[in-house]
Amino acid sequence: MRVLWLLLLCLSLAACGGSGSTGTSGDDGKVHIPEPVPGTARLSIGTQGPAADSVLYAAQFTLRLPAGVSLPATDGRLLPDGLLVPAVSGSYAGASFLQIAVPGQVLLVNIAHPGGVTVGPLATLTCQVDAGAALTADAFTLENFSARDANGVVIPGITAKLTLQTQ
Image 1 (cartoon, rainbow, N blue to C red):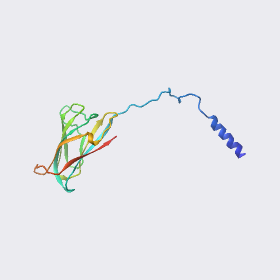
Image 2 (cartoon, rainbow, N blue to C red):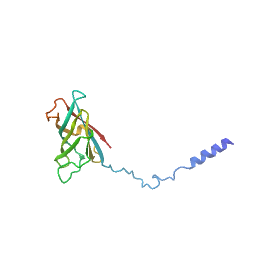
Image 3 (cartoon, helix red, strand yellow):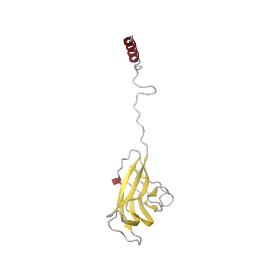
Image 4 (tube, helix red, strand yellow):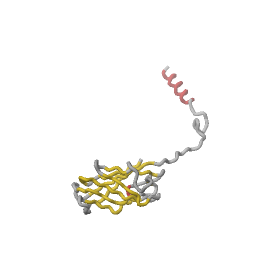
C-alpha cells in the first residue's frame, strides 16, 4: 500500500510540469537587466606617522575626485554641511571647492582640533558615485598634505592615508 501511495505521489508531482511556454507567468520571454543605480562612497581620511602617539593640531590638503564621483555644490564654494564629518569629537572639518566642474572636482580640506589629535582617523567624506563606476581609494588624488603642530609649524613624517567604502 505504501508503495502504491508513493507511486501516485511521484506521478502527480511529475504531472505538475510546466505549461509548455518558454516564459514564466508575466514574462515576455526577454531577459530584463535592471539599470545600474547611483551609489555612495565614504572616503576615510587618516594619518600615519613615525610614532603612534604623534600629535597634530591641524591638517590641510587638496583632494581631487576621480571621474564618476561627485559632490553637490552650494551657491558658494563651500562644501555643504554633513558631507565631511570629523572623526574626533570637537574637531573642525571644512572644505571649499577649488574646482567645481564635474568630473574632476578639487577640494581644499582643512581639519583642526584645538587640543590636538594623535595620528589615525581624521574625517570621512561622503560622495555620490555614478552608476556602474568601479572605484578604489587609489583613484582619489590627495596632494600637498601637511600636518601642523600647535604653533602652525609643519610636522615632518606624518602622511595621509585614504580608505574607501562603497555601497
